[in-house]
Length: 266
Image (cartoon, rainbow, N blue to C red; front, side):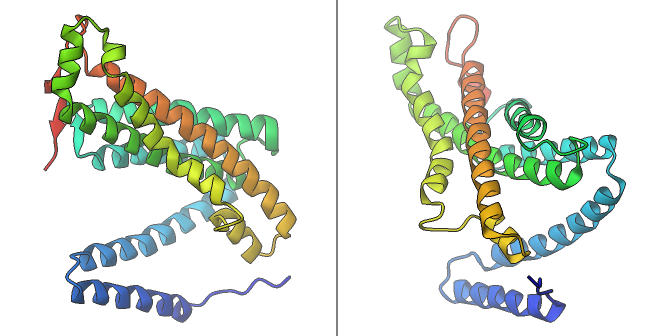
């Protein structure tokens, strides 16, 4: 099957559609036109740069360069988790908890997938390791960000209820239990919805890309099933770890709710 290459003018036509959408949002006074254009420009620039980096990385295929790329991706994902929260854990805890949760879940699942399930030789082959980790971090980042954001916002709004429960003698785990469960649900629901709709409502991006690149549909389906299962596991464990760690941070050793550990962003 011949793969159709894309020229600059063809990408330019797609870019003009984005500009048209931005003009429509400006006419409708949605206030999204500037953000939409900036996001589109960032997409083009960032993906072009990462394409050059990946080409160099694929040609070298050394473990230390793959590890460096993975660490950079993790740190950037941690920053994005922190930047998307309206009510943020004070200090460096928002970044630390989010980054550590993604590291434990995403890296563990990616390593397990590479070493046990796929088994490339060597196991850190960039063609497999970087895309797998990227998809894992991207989805886990969303789950962790949603979970922590819902946790801190709910605690901020229900602090009087939590303190009343504490005064009635409930341990902090019970006083905040329903909030923790809802935060975990909020972080995991997008992944569950994506799995439930795959193949019926939508064709996932990786599968579509493989088919467009000429891979047999049956092989693309196998890889997509594997990716969706591993993303589900990574996102689930990452979200649970982040919410559990974040909720513990909100209480001191005497089980008092510490609202000074939440900072409201403007």
